[in-house]
Image (cartoon, rainbow, N blue to C red):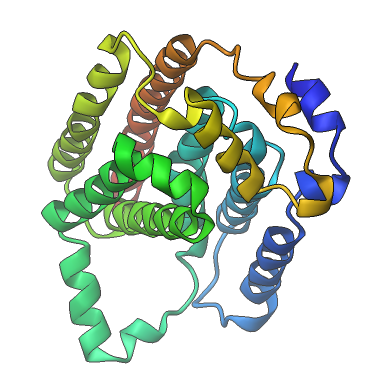
Length: 271
Protein backbone atom coordinates (compact mmCIF):
# COMPACT_ATOMS: atom_id res chain seq x y z
CA UNK A 1 0.00 0.00 0.00
CA UNK A 2 2.82 2.39 0.82
CA UNK A 3 4.49 1.55 -2.50
CA UNK A 4 1.29 2.57 -4.30
CA UNK A 5 1.27 5.83 -2.38
CA UNK A 6 4.89 6.64 -3.24
CA UNK A 7 4.45 5.77 -6.92
CA UNK A 8 2.13 8.75 -7.29
CA UNK A 9 4.85 11.30 -6.61
CA UNK A 10 7.84 12.64 -8.50
CA UNK A 11 11.39 11.81 -7.57
CA UNK A 12 11.91 15.42 -6.47
CA UNK A 13 9.00 15.13 -4.04
CA UNK A 14 10.22 11.91 -2.44
CA UNK A 15 13.87 13.01 -2.20
CA UNK A 16 14.35 16.47 -0.72
CA UNK A 17 16.78 18.39 -2.92
CA UNK A 18 17.26 21.17 -0.37
CA UNK A 19 18.44 18.77 2.33
CA UNK A 20 20.66 17.00 -0.20
CA UNK A 21 22.37 20.29 -1.13
CA UNK A 22 22.74 21.19 2.54
CA UNK A 23 24.40 17.84 3.28
CA UNK A 24 26.63 18.18 0.21
CA UNK A 25 27.71 21.68 1.30
CA UNK A 26 28.56 20.46 4.81
CA UNK A 27 30.61 17.59 3.36
CA UNK A 28 32.53 19.94 1.06
CA UNK A 29 33.15 22.29 3.97
CA UNK A 30 34.33 19.44 6.16
CA UNK A 31 36.97 18.29 3.69
CA UNK A 32 38.04 21.53 2.01
CA UNK A 33 37.01 24.62 3.99
CA UNK A 34 37.41 23.85 7.72
CA UNK A 35 41.05 23.57 8.79
CA UNK A 36 42.19 20.29 10.29
CA UNK A 37 43.76 20.04 13.70
CA UNK A 38 46.59 17.57 13.46
CA UNK A 39 46.49 14.23 11.72
CA UNK A 40 43.56 11.83 12.02
CA UNK A 41 42.92 8.31 10.85
CA UNK A 42 40.25 7.05 8.51
CA UNK A 43 37.76 6.58 11.35
CA UNK A 44 36.87 10.27 11.47
CA UNK A 45 36.02 11.00 7.80
CA UNK A 46 34.28 7.63 7.36
CA UNK A 47 32.20 8.23 10.48
CA UNK A 48 31.33 11.74 9.32
CA UNK A 49 30.28 10.58 5.84
CA UNK A 50 28.15 7.78 7.26
CA UNK A 51 26.55 10.27 9.63
CA UNK A 52 25.66 12.60 6.76
CA UNK A 53 24.20 9.70 4.76
CA UNK A 54 22.01 8.65 7.69
CA UNK A 55 21.01 12.29 8.25
CA UNK A 56 19.88 12.62 4.66
CA UNK A 57 18.03 9.29 4.68
CA UNK A 58 16.21 10.21 7.88
CA UNK A 59 15.27 13.77 6.91
CA UNK A 60 15.33 13.94 3.10
CA UNK A 61 14.30 10.51 1.82
CA UNK A 62 10.81 9.00 1.26
CA UNK A 63 10.98 7.96 4.94
CA UNK A 64 10.02 11.56 5.78
CA UNK A 65 6.72 11.18 3.93
CA UNK A 66 6.10 7.62 5.15
CA UNK A 67 6.57 8.96 8.68
CA UNK A 68 3.37 10.91 8.17
CA UNK A 69 1.51 7.67 7.44
CA UNK A 70 2.67 5.66 10.45
CA UNK A 71 4.33 6.33 13.79
CA UNK A 72 6.57 3.32 13.16
CA UNK A 73 8.27 5.08 10.24
CA UNK A 74 8.55 8.28 12.27
CA UNK A 75 10.40 6.38 14.99
CA UNK A 76 12.87 5.09 12.41
CA UNK A 77 13.53 8.76 11.62
CA UNK A 78 14.04 9.66 15.27
CA UNK A 79 16.40 6.74 15.91
CA UNK A 80 18.34 7.57 12.74
CA UNK A 81 18.73 11.25 13.64
CA UNK A 82 19.33 11.08 17.38
CA UNK A 83 21.13 7.80 17.89
CA UNK A 84 22.92 7.05 14.61
CA UNK A 85 23.59 10.25 12.64
CA UNK A 86 24.34 12.43 15.68
CA UNK A 87 27.01 10.19 17.31
CA UNK A 88 28.60 9.41 13.93
CA UNK A 89 28.87 13.12 13.12
CA UNK A 90 30.29 13.90 16.54
CA UNK A 91 32.95 11.21 16.17
CA UNK A 92 33.81 12.43 12.68
CA UNK A 93 33.90 16.13 13.54
CA UNK A 94 36.36 15.80 16.43
CA UNK A 95 39.64 16.47 14.50
CA UNK A 96 38.44 19.82 13.24
CA UNK A 97 39.19 23.12 14.99
CA UNK A 98 36.36 25.11 16.57
CA UNK A 99 35.94 28.88 16.84
CA UNK A 100 34.67 28.25 20.38
CA UNK A 101 38.24 27.61 21.48
CA UNK A 102 39.05 31.28 20.91
CA UNK A 103 35.94 32.94 22.38
CA UNK A 104 35.59 32.64 26.14
CA UNK A 105 31.83 33.17 26.49
CA UNK A 106 31.16 30.43 23.92
CA UNK A 107 33.50 28.13 25.82
CA UNK A 108 31.61 28.80 29.06
CA UNK A 109 28.23 28.28 27.41
CA UNK A 110 29.28 24.99 25.85
CA UNK A 111 30.82 23.84 29.12
CA UNK A 112 27.46 24.42 30.82
CA UNK A 113 25.49 22.69 28.05
CA UNK A 114 27.77 19.64 28.22
CA UNK A 115 27.26 19.01 31.91
CA UNK A 116 25.51 15.62 32.28
CA UNK A 117 22.38 17.09 33.91
CA UNK A 118 22.06 19.87 31.31
CA UNK A 119 22.60 17.60 28.31
CA UNK A 120 20.09 15.04 29.57
CA UNK A 121 17.46 17.67 30.46
CA UNK A 122 17.77 19.41 27.07
CA UNK A 123 17.36 16.21 25.07
CA UNK A 124 14.45 15.10 27.24
CA UNK A 125 12.66 18.46 27.02
CA UNK A 126 12.87 18.59 23.23
CA UNK A 127 11.81 14.95 22.93
CA UNK A 128 8.73 15.36 25.11
CA UNK A 129 8.03 18.83 23.77
CA UNK A 130 7.74 17.31 20.30
CA UNK A 131 6.11 13.97 21.15
CA UNK A 132 3.50 15.16 23.62
CA UNK A 133 0.26 14.34 21.70
CA UNK A 134 -1.06 17.91 21.66
CA UNK A 135 2.22 19.42 20.41
CA UNK A 136 2.94 16.58 17.98
CA UNK A 137 -0.41 17.02 16.24
CA UNK A 138 0.21 20.77 15.93
CA UNK A 139 3.78 20.29 14.68
CA UNK A 140 2.72 17.83 11.99
CA UNK A 141 0.33 20.31 10.40
CA UNK A 142 2.58 23.37 10.94
CA UNK A 143 5.72 22.84 8.88
CA UNK A 144 7.84 25.44 10.68
CA UNK A 145 6.99 24.04 14.11
CA UNK A 146 7.91 20.59 12.87
CA UNK A 147 11.27 21.89 11.59
CA UNK A 148 11.87 23.72 14.88
CA UNK A 149 11.36 20.62 17.00
CA UNK A 150 13.29 18.33 14.68
CA UNK A 151 16.23 20.76 14.55
CA UNK A 152 16.09 21.30 18.30
CA UNK A 153 16.02 17.55 18.93
CA UNK A 154 18.95 16.98 16.61
CA UNK A 155 21.05 19.77 18.14
CA UNK A 156 20.26 18.49 21.65
CA UNK A 157 21.37 15.01 20.55
CA UNK A 158 24.59 16.43 19.07
CA UNK A 159 25.27 18.19 22.37
CA UNK A 160 24.61 14.99 24.33
CA UNK A 161 26.90 12.83 22.19
CA UNK A 162 29.62 15.47 22.06
CA UNK A 163 29.68 15.54 25.86
CA UNK A 164 29.46 11.75 26.01
CA UNK A 165 32.48 11.11 23.80
CA UNK A 166 34.79 14.00 24.66
CA UNK A 167 33.87 15.53 28.02
CA UNK A 168 32.52 12.72 30.17
CA UNK A 169 35.78 10.86 30.40
CA UNK A 170 34.88 8.63 33.34
CA UNK A 171 33.13 5.40 32.40
CA UNK A 172 30.96 5.62 35.51
CA UNK A 173 29.63 9.03 34.42
CA UNK A 174 28.92 7.73 30.93
CA UNK A 175 27.04 4.67 32.18
CA UNK A 176 25.00 6.68 34.68
CA UNK A 177 24.20 9.40 32.16
CA UNK A 178 23.11 6.90 29.52
CA UNK A 179 20.99 4.96 32.02
CA UNK A 180 19.28 8.16 33.16
CA UNK A 181 18.67 9.29 29.58
CA UNK A 182 17.07 5.99 28.60
CA UNK A 183 15.02 6.02 31.81
CA UNK A 184 13.76 9.49 30.88
CA UNK A 185 12.24 8.03 27.70
CA UNK A 186 10.50 5.17 29.52
CA UNK A 187 7.33 7.05 30.64
CA UNK A 188 6.61 7.93 27.01
CA UNK A 189 7.27 4.35 25.89
CA UNK A 190 5.05 2.83 28.58
CA UNK A 191 2.27 5.32 27.85
CA UNK A 192 2.29 4.49 24.15
CA UNK A 193 2.58 0.73 24.67
CA UNK A 194 -0.20 0.50 27.27
CA UNK A 195 -2.64 2.86 25.56
CA UNK A 196 -5.63 1.07 24.04
CA UNK A 197 -6.10 3.82 21.45
CA UNK A 198 -3.82 5.80 19.16
CA UNK A 199 -2.34 8.69 21.13
CA UNK A 200 -1.95 10.98 18.09
CA UNK A 201 -4.81 12.44 16.06
CA UNK A 202 -2.33 12.66 13.17
CA UNK A 203 -2.70 8.91 12.68
CA UNK A 204 -6.37 8.63 13.74
CA UNK A 205 -8.40 11.65 12.72
CA UNK A 206 -8.92 11.83 8.91
CA UNK A 207 -8.96 15.65 8.91
CA UNK A 208 -5.66 15.97 10.83
CA UNK A 209 -4.18 13.12 8.80
CA UNK A 210 -4.98 14.94 5.54
CA UNK A 211 -3.53 18.22 6.81
CA UNK A 212 -0.35 16.45 7.89
CA UNK A 213 0.16 14.97 4.43
CA UNK A 214 -0.65 18.16 2.53
CA UNK A 215 2.06 20.05 4.42
CA UNK A 216 4.86 18.04 2.79
CA UNK A 217 3.32 17.48 -0.67
CA UNK A 218 3.47 20.19 -3.38
CA UNK A 219 0.11 21.67 -4.35
CA UNK A 220 0.39 20.54 -7.98
CA UNK A 221 0.82 16.90 -6.87
CA UNK A 222 -1.96 16.70 -4.30
CA UNK A 223 -4.62 14.04 -4.85
CA UNK A 224 -8.32 13.90 -3.92
CA UNK A 225 -9.01 13.40 -0.21
CA UNK A 226 -10.24 9.86 -0.84
CA UNK A 227 -6.79 8.84 -2.07
CA UNK A 228 -5.16 9.83 1.20
CA UNK A 229 -7.85 8.59 3.58
CA UNK A 230 -7.47 5.18 1.96
CA UNK A 231 -4.26 4.81 3.97
CA UNK A 232 -5.96 5.24 7.34
CA UNK A 233 -6.70 1.47 7.60
CA UNK A 234 -3.20 1.23 9.11
CA UNK A 235 -3.97 0.09 12.65
CA UNK A 236 -2.79 3.11 14.70
CA UNK A 237 -2.42 1.10 17.92
CA UNK A 238 -0.31 -1.60 16.27
CA UNK A 239 1.85 0.94 14.44
CA UNK A 240 2.21 2.93 17.65
CA UNK A 241 3.31 -0.11 19.65
CA UNK A 242 5.71 -1.28 16.96
CA UNK A 243 7.20 2.19 16.59
CA UNK A 244 7.80 2.56 20.32
CA UNK A 245 9.30 -0.93 20.58
CA UNK A 246 11.64 -0.13 17.69
CA UNK A 247 12.63 3.11 19.42
CA UNK A 248 13.17 1.46 22.81
CA UNK A 249 15.20 -1.54 21.64
CA UNK A 250 17.21 0.53 19.15
CA UNK A 251 18.35 3.09 21.70
CA UNK A 252 19.17 0.33 24.22
CA UNK A 253 21.28 -1.55 21.67
CA UNK A 254 23.05 1.56 20.37
CA UNK A 255 23.71 2.76 23.91
CA UNK A 256 25.38 -0.51 24.90
CA UNK A 257 27.48 -0.53 21.71
CA UNK A 258 28.68 3.05 22.22
CA UNK A 259 29.40 2.48 25.91
CA UNK A 260 31.51 -0.59 25.21
CA UNK A 261 33.29 1.07 22.27
CA UNK A 262 34.05 4.27 24.18
CA UNK A 263 35.32 2.25 27.15
CA UNK A 264 37.77 0.39 24.91
CA UNK A 265 38.88 3.65 23.26
CA UNK A 266 39.58 5.13 26.67
CA UNK A 267 41.60 2.09 27.75
CA UNK A 268 43.67 2.27 24.56
CA UNK A 269 44.48 5.96 25.24
CA UNK A 270 45.56 5.16 28.78
CA UNK A 271 47.89 2.43 27.51
